[in-house]
Structure formats: C-alpha cells, structure tokens
Image 1: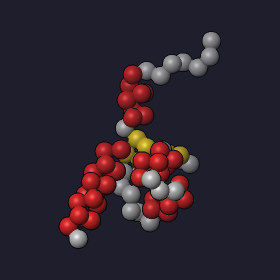
Image 2 (image 1 turned 135 degrees about the vertical axis):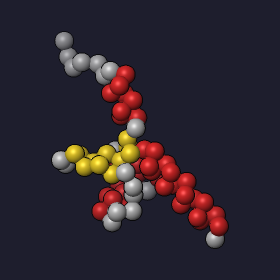
Image 3 (image 1 turned 180 degrees about the horizontal axis):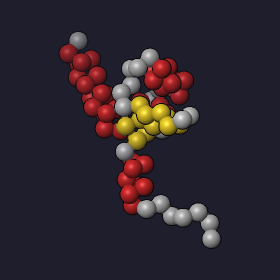
Image 4 (image 1 turned 180 degrees about the vertical axis):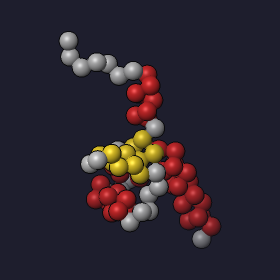
Length: 74
C-alpha cells in the first residue's frame, strides 16, 4: 500500500514553512550561516519541534523585504 498521500492541508502547511536547507537556497547563503543566524536570533519565525527546525515563510519574506529596504536607504 505504501505511505498515504499528502492531503491538501498538509501540502499547504508545508508551503508555509522553510526548512533550513530551503532557506539557505532562498537567501543564497550557506546552511551553516542559516544555523548561525538562527542561533543568534536574527531570523524570525523559527519553530523548534524537538530536533526539527521550521521557519515560518511569511515572517522570513517580511524580514527579507525590510532588510532590502534598509540596505537601499544607505
């Protein structure tokens, strides 16, 4: 039979979060840098589920947009 297929709700929930590897690819930085930024509290929306990290996508997108605006003002 195999594993059950993802429901639409599960697929939507997965789209709401980045994994650390996905975030590294999105931000074009290394995985190690992502973990350092998480450790330092720089990246918003981080949820720890035991040993699993998930980063809330809307929080990161807002943070990245604000950072970009700040850099353009300089």
